[in-house]
Image 1 (tube, rainbow, N blue to C red):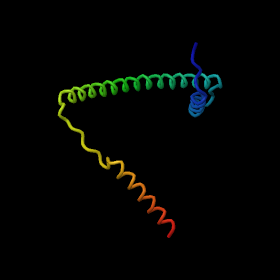
Image 2: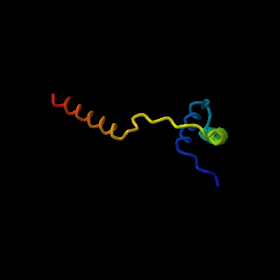
Image 3: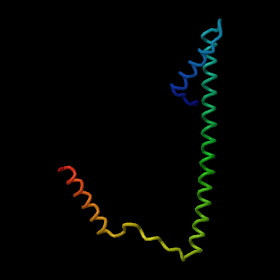
Image 4: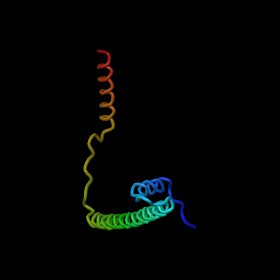
Length: 110
């Protein structure tokens, strides 16, 4: 069973077929040309989907390979230390939040 093409593809094919219609060409001939254009569009989209899937597979494979290399480096070097986080003190964060709200309220009351 053949897939039904979208209305958008059919309309585009008819538009292109009518745009290139020769003088004396019958409606049946134009319809056949539009069907050929529809088939060409659908084949092109299929090819693009296949290419896109292949690119995604290659990209995922590269990410996986580089991830494996990073994991091996991390496992081999156990002396890596984490950098201390900025503003890591929760009290300092709350103090800054409260001060900013007081500043905002003071600005509105002026």
